[in-house]
Image (cartoon, rainbow, N blue to C red; front, side):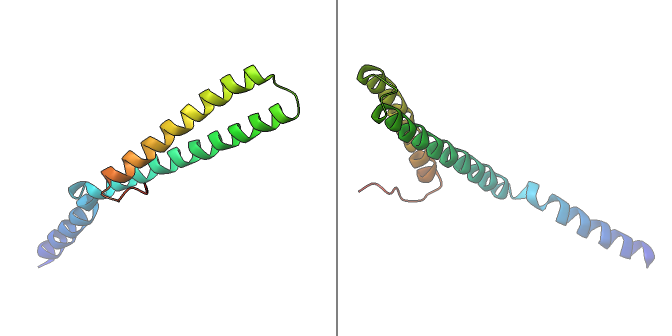
Length: 99
């Protein structure tokens, strides 16, 4: 009788511990969620960089030529981050927010 109880407890422990491994979707969802959070943080940082660049230009710290070159590069980076976020949303089966 004791052997049967021990076997049942061991089987339950194995089932509980192996559940995340058997249903890989939870791990994939966590990875995608972390990737989304990283991309959103990078997007927000890029937006801050663009605002700071505009402030530097308005206060005369940058020439128009330097401003335009840096602005173009920062906005290209921001667009790429937005595309990656859109692609991640589409791969998760969520509809895109495009209008």
